[in-house]
Length: 226
Image 1 (cartoon, rainbow, N blue to C red):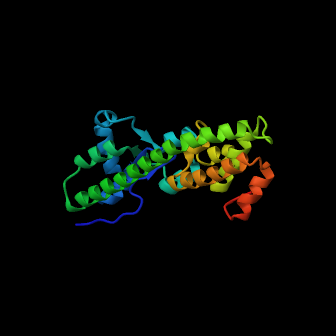
Image 2: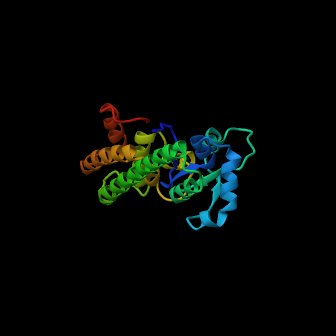
Image 3: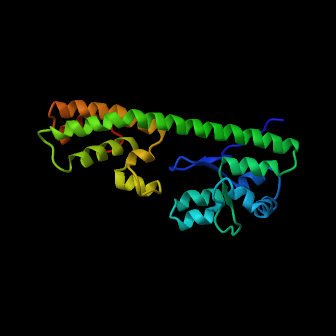
């Protein structure tokens, strides 16, 4: 038996895949309270594989409320657990091994594998980006038109090109204040960022002004936002 379910697992900008207890309940054809009862009964077992969080914890910690509303639904008071991969697979082992349970487990394993591959690709892109970032810093340090704010202005330009937002708005929109804007980009966004950064480094090397660089990116059709 094969099962096709969209969005059986999720990943936010901390790059840690997870699923939800109500998603598992729906996938295996059980009431949600049946699943949460299993989790509470074996709480110690689940906590061996990480902290047992709920969506209410996310709201308290300031995560994106609109995204949570999509997953939990407004006005629903039930406690919905966030489960990492190990916790989710453990939960499945505590259920009866029916056809629908086995089918859902396969769908869940496939989705976790896909999300982990996305994390791997993200890490590869970040590793490639680091030396380029140092090169951007070096280029700015000898730029005739540079100032102490040049690095921020250039990177904000790149973030706006890729996401439509400068770094501070990007962090707020994606629910994280720590780290750099690069840590919040998706794999495809990182690739685009690197392409644009290499162009900007070359133009800085030619001592173009900031406005000239921005206009060049615009003329090439590379700017998502100016």
